[in-house]
Length: 172
Image (cartoon, rainbow, N blue to C red; front, side, top):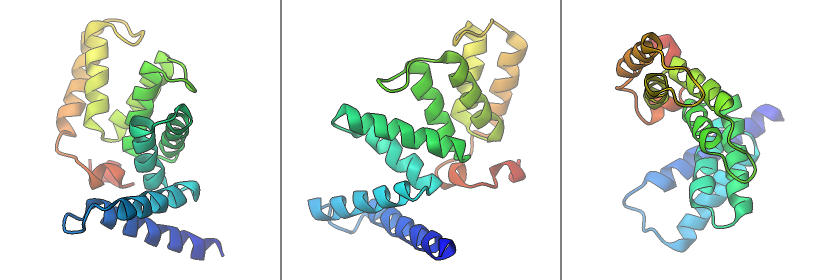
């Protein structure tokens, strides 16, 4: 039963993704509600990419504080599951803090480092800047800044779907 529900969740996610990115489909409120409902179902089922995308949307575009808190929780769950975009977003959430998750620079550094090492260029750039300027509770360290900047430049070509895939590390 788990495989069947997992397959169904993956299919629902693909449908939601297609609806979300399709330019020819009219952007009606009904289509948008269906798309968001599908993303929510997939996130609630634990689909890492859905947790990341839907959580990001809720956190940044949610109207109520409850929506924003739920979005942050989804992003952190996706980060724990290994989603690179979510790991970077988790770093941002913990760097700046929000109602449910107070500012925790040391945890933000951890998430940025995980994402940067795994191939997220913005996470590596953030750590390079933090080491260069002594931000996020880190000491000024030009060697670390150079290391993270080189890593960011090496991963700079990655975008979109590539950052969601599990095999980014295998390619680099």
